[in-house]
Length: 290
Image 1 (spheres, rainbow, N blue to C red):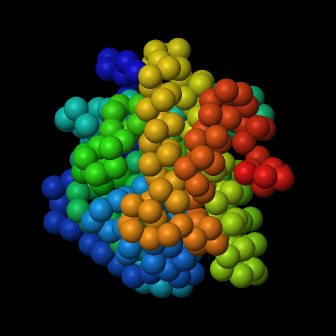
Image 2 (tube, rainbow, N blue to C red):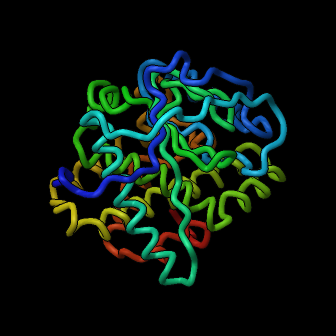
Image 3 (spheres, helix red, strand yellow):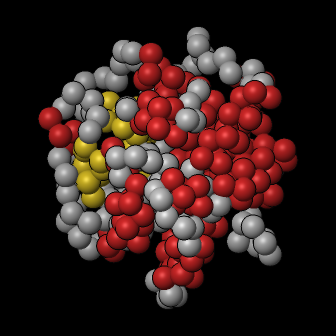
């Protein structure tokens, strides 16, 4: 993957260096944070890779919300890490703008918030232990700057393209939000049992993996993506499957508790998007089997 010297996105909000990054807060809208809270507690400080709030209702409501301070000056690409993130974000913007345009839609880019340790979001407190996540309440992606190191050192899933896959996956949740998929799934999840709600969450996550693969295919020529890069992304998908994470936490995998999909499923759907380059092939909700 060759990313240096390419266009960077201006949709970066850098909160690093701020005390508390804007502070903590209460629960996310509708209390949805608790749905995966148990798994996060099991893995905190050891294994990340679990998106905390991709399914929160964008309309808000419920819980206390902490607001982070607005940026006080123009964004600056002032370090290598931010330059990488801004470059990958720009590539997602180009790909999704083209895909939306082809279907007669307009793509409204997300803002990616870089923070260190903790910050506030419209979905409640953002903390490093949550891993990267997308918050529909403010349509922003949240990424702790230390996450890539943790992913490399503790999950053994490092590398530029592995990191790009993580960003593309979170942006995919924004795409789902724009298309109305998240809102529809929220409505369904509110009417079913916990295990059924988890199963719906798995389909959301696998679709995001497929969209990330689609992005990789569309951006492959510009970024000179190699077979080794794709293997890196697939290995990362395997490391953050629910079954792998539960085993890593010393527990027997419990399928009814899965919210993101197994390692094999995450690999399969990423590769499906990469192989096809077609968003129509990413409809996990019509798939008879995952």
